[in-house]
Length: 471
Ligand code: FAD
Ligand code: SF4
Image 1 (cartoon, rainbow, N blue to C red):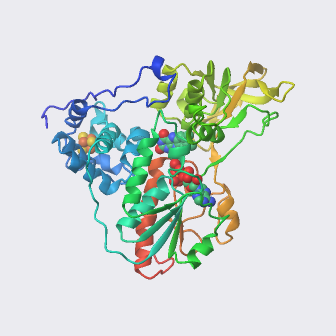
Image 2: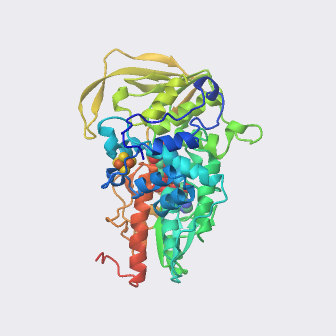
Image 3: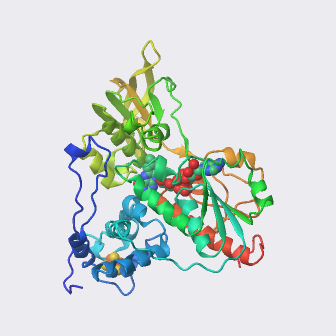
């Protein structure tokens, strides 16, 4: 390692905005070997590495970075996968800037180590090499666990429990595994071959996957427990859309982001006619919201062929919850940001198709409960904005199917499942974690919750199932 500290991080090559706005291929191209080595060489291998404290799954960050610097890639993979079964996904979509990288000591004086980009480099190296790092798998326990949902929470819990020697079956309602990683986040941010290869890694640990299995409808939780499963983990996400409840919201051409992104990604509308999924292109598209989902929907709409795409957000850019990197990418591609703007009603044509939106301008007042300054309407600012597609991306709520079919499961007023610190629900033998308990959050927080639950399920099973004994 170099003795002089280098405070400048290595840039990540990207497709040019002029080119990428017309295709669905990945925007960020990843480091090559020299770039990864140069970035890894900046890490000063702290004796007490703060970066690990910022990682919700506790990856030994300096260890895997040292292996990159030593050009020992099999060890780098091994080190990462000890704690994280989905590194190619996390390296691409985790908000490292508020996690591990925020804690990196170099961030005090310059740019922190690009931990996410290095993580991605290691995962991508593994994809292109015949490298099979086998994690240690404990002797079989004879216990069987059902995991409901194959998003990051379910996949992580499944991988951890399989490594602990339990027999694990994942039940997934859709026809493909991955949860939001597959149906929500677009190909240009998270290629689906990366998700598929990381799902394959989880199944290679011995985890069985049953797709098209809607639990709570075809089979109830109690039936799983009565028919051979010793414990159940619910990683069912928060995938039901939230709407604005404004006049005209039922007009044709108005989509929830959930439906729009599912059609575009899971159902591959962007490959029409190869895939027979209809999705209106639109000339002038408005996306309502300011999070990652809104950015993804807007950038999808642009790539689907819209002439003009607006993000309509009721606060200012400072309050936007989307990752900075994605806001910058969207701006570079020509997405128009209408800050401090809010819709009040939608107007249709004679055929029931949306043709315009009435919007008002907003001003920021005092901070609300979330700590962000709350927006107030500026009087007399109503005006009409012509649009032919509207995508509503103002958040999601938990799908009520399993909670409503299972009276033993208590929910909060937001519809999330009530759990304790170990992920135990109010129903004996049933754990939950990820968006179904936190509400819409992040991939890594769902994975972290899965790890906590897996550890508790394992110790509970080994003790013979002593409920609410956390000792
Ligand atoms: P999910 O990923 O929602 O998975 C739940 C799974 O359970 C689904 O596959 C669902 O089909 C299945 N399921 C539900 N009910 C049943 C049932 N009854 N029976 C069987 N299966 C069932 N986070 C980031 O960290 N970075 C990002 O850049 C980012 N971008 C995002 C972009 C979009 C468009 C969206 C929607 C979210 C984004 N997030 C991002 C948030 C992140 O994806 C979620 O926090 C995370 O996926 C939650 O994981 P989960 O496993 O709890 O649930
Ligand atoms: Fe390397 Fe930064 Fe972690 Fe220190 S805090 S070990 S410099 S990544």
